[in-house]
Amino acid sequence: MDSLIKVEVRSNVEGEIDKLYVDEGYDVVKGQQLLKIDEKQIREEYNQALANYS
Image (cartoon, rainbow, N blue to C red; front, side, top):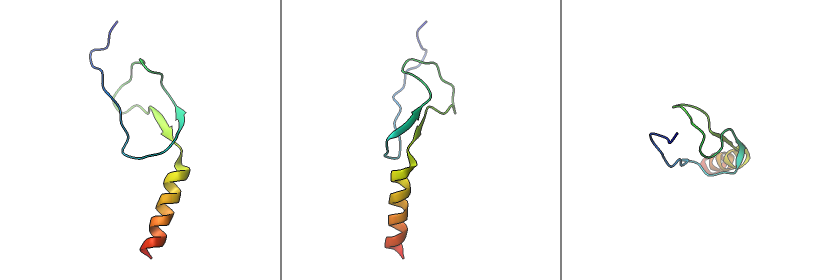
């Protein structure tokens, strides 16, 4: 069975993928979590931005 719709998924944030919950070609539903991005880099950038703001 072929998918009705195929889409390219992109992220608004940079980072390494920590966990992938689906494989390519899997059926997914709206709102389903597909992956988890490692928060370490995001937290470091956030803390640096806060330090620069002060």
